[in-house]
Image (cartoon, rainbow, N blue to C red; front, side):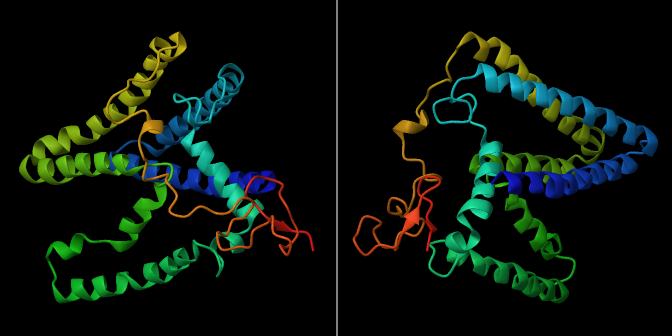
Length: 266
């Protein structure tokens, strides 16, 4: 999957980063920040962040045992695992085995049709009921918001929904002056505060070998996590649970370059 990862990094990630930069420039334009100063801040921040991220990643890979595995709770690397899993799906297993007619994920293909058709009734509902709450429903935004899952999980969306409702609905409607003055400043404080606390907790707890806090909701090994519990278990060596048993006499010949991934040799 290395060529797929390389192509995705140079192609998609570059485009996504450019879109993020454009979005930030647009926000700076709304806030009356000079475009030249905004661009140089982005350029300098990208250079520093890229250098620090590369050095930190190399240091962690050499200093942390079992990093990005279930054995290391502090460094689970959900984004990296998602990126790698996508490269395996599209570059090793092949889409036909994952989403083809005989696969258990075939139903996902119908969501392309649902996403195409779903905005149409809401468009006509807005025409039939103008100046109502229907004006605030935007199907592409609602569907695109789920694109961060994985690595984002359900509790991330719950927190985002609660904070968004508190500031963009309650504060904006009932305290407009406070919302206009403090909302975006507080949003920046949340982002920088989380980054600072992650760094602080790493040096205070993780580097000293302190374990994660245990309460009734963890550790995950002692509970049934619905987000990872498989509804169906594929047979050993097979992506498709309805595929023939590889140990049977009449089974097709397969080789297994990675666990649970079949490839025909004939």
